[in-house]
Amino acid sequence: MAQNQVVVVTGGGRGIGRAIAQRFATDGAQVVAASRTPAELEETRGIVEQAGGRCHVQATDVCEPGEINSLIEMTAERFGRIDVLVNCAGIAPQATIEELEPELFTSIMAVNVNAVYLACRGVWPVMKKRKSGVIVNISSIASVDPFAGFAAYGAAKAWVNAWTKALADEGRRWGIRVFSVAPGAVETKMLRDGFPTFPAEQTLRPEDVADVVHALTQPGCRYATGQTVFVRRQGD
Image (cartoon, rainbow, N blue to C red; front, side, top):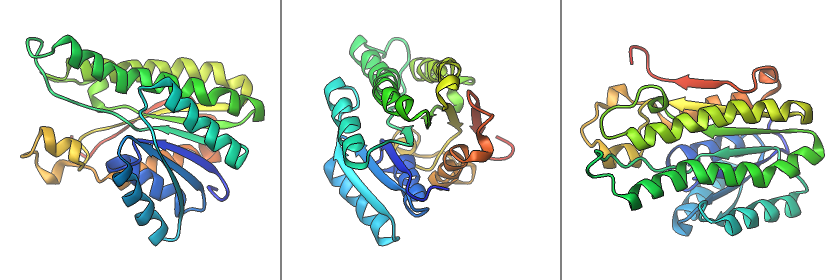
């Protein structure tokens, strides 16, 4: 069903975002991957195209309204529409309340909250005009089960879940569906930077999350809008 779809993926330079870009591209979609790091984006493009997919890239700071707007405008002008937006960009620094300086708190909220708002607001008129579209926001199991040091991150992801539900209600009349996908631990650089000894047998693969994201954009999930889908290993 992704044939000829136009899909924008933030955080597409590595990890879950790269896996999502590859999942859609190898299914026939035109994928636009965005992140702040051009070198990582080029690596994503190479991986996707080597597998036979089509991937376009644009360096984007998701915290900057002008850069998000440029990403949306470029995609809409080039392809005439945007069928799917995946908000995957995120940061998850661990910090106790004493360590959580105002600058760090602001950064966590900027990437995990503000950027989701900016991208959703930017793509909304494009999807509304066609009365069709799917937005998938990447949340986290920490949104409902945070632990010490993840207060700000967990709160930000809880916001994502609430935002998703409310935005889905707004989008029903326009044919716009909105979902959250909340994984447990995923085998990524972000996980290993914070938790280098986390047991590998308890982690998800980025591809596991990408499969769920892809499935939510398909017609079979057209009546499930507004849901947060939790993805975790059995027994977690």
